[in-house]
Image (cartoon, rainbow over all chains, first blue to last red; front, side, top):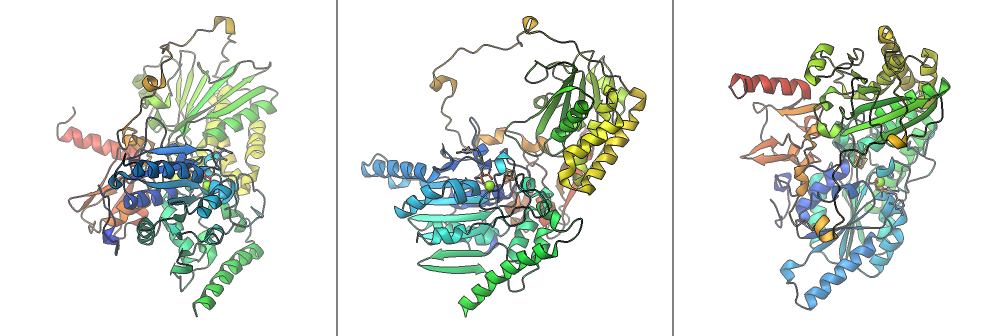
Length: 310
Length: 316
Ligand SMILES: Cc1ncc(C[n+]2csc(CCOP(=O)(O)OP(=O)(O)O)c2C)c(N)n1
Ligand code: SF4
Ligand SMILES: [Mg+2]
């Protein structure tokens, strides 16, 4: 078991035995579980998780849990409020010397995008305002996965969901949660993905060494909701980065830095065409207009990044 | 009343099968109930779906206790108690199993005095992309075995239920369903309606009454870590990743880091797959840079394993 505290420099420094228990009810090939097991290896067992309704709620269903510590389940909009309660309780126990510094726990919120981008945003905003000392992990599978992949505020433009049918898929656009969180000036904000475990591990390690609100969004390829063969989870995640669809970046000390800039971006359709939720963009005929629009949005993002870098 | 139960794994289209069959019944003028049943588990875990159909309004509710027809999309579920394939089966029940093995083998194995048929059309689907189409084949076969559903109603039901998925998918489902429907021609009408049950004759199941206890006793606090390992999710697997150590370069982190379930650990500088928990997603097969991990059908892997155990005298 690894309660890792050493610095992670290369992939060989990643843990090779895992803290998170097997036997969870997540789908085979779940991209959220893939990110979470690396995150848990880095954060270690001195953690308490606060969860809002979503797929990951099923991780810890009495009497089974993959965790080595406690778990609090809250209403969908209230996980950061639950985290506040636990942090306060721990602080009181510390103050009264009823627990030692050694026994203190890291409070970690774990919710889906439905909660993070939508229902729970107000409670999250409040927690950052109060500079609550916690880590928020949003696994973003771009929809309400647990209830059958209805669209959420994180669903990308044109994706098919169980509530977005037809030739053009979802009419809305993915909300920019990273910028919304950054606007609150918390201690740390980062985007990560399980397909890049090294970048992920480094960011979690960094977050772990800080205090205050530390906010993580993990894009989580979901074979069930995105409609692809489970074996493709990592390939799709890697393409999300390579095509520029999912920028890997972090915010700290008032500055946003891209931790990986795909210099030779692959065309977005390489990412899209592996997923059934975008099949209507390719069959029965290619929807050139929509494909060009999606590509143009990605290009526009990276042009701004390049300008800012100069 | 007809009572039909479909058993499969999440992702094999059992919910769709029950909807297709339900709609086909409806088009033939029946009153219908159809519903899927699954717990917290996901793709790959055992699920079932059921259909009730009658000429008169249906007052029965809840899961079907004594089915007239049981369709099993995945024969590896039969021996898994949690899948409940054999629950409530009587002499009256007809079983249709999607299996490469002979009907006689199943009859003997299950000691079932009622009829057992195997579904030849969709037998042994190992290509995972084909799995969702098993459902339509099951619905087609069921429709013919029941005998009161026309081919036209079956086709109409598939069109009604699946049209959102596009012409290609509809056509593939139509093809599989109609082929299964025709393959069952010689058994048309073999399923016999079960009699109506009345609430008056309701026999309570053979359960144990637990007295109401204080929560501290009935749901004690659990301090043990990672109790989830007691759940053997390895049963979900239809394909098994096998590491060829002649080709494994011992890079170790790749398969172990990417395995979403953390079911690959490194022991003595070698990756070891925990088959009790590997769900068979095949992410490791796709990621291993030395192509040292191969996917083999679970059934074949089990057969090879048994042969090996026989050879070394572990079993006779
Ligand atoms: C207030 C409230 N509304 C609706 C639900 C039903 N519900 C349970 S899980 C879920 C989906 C959550 O989506 P997300 O946060 O993205 O997590 P995912 O299911 O994708 O893991 C919903 C809508 C709920 N539990 N509480
Ligand atoms: S629906 Fe998606 S996010 Fe939810 S458990 Fe399955 S793969 Fe994971
Ligand atoms: Mg979600």
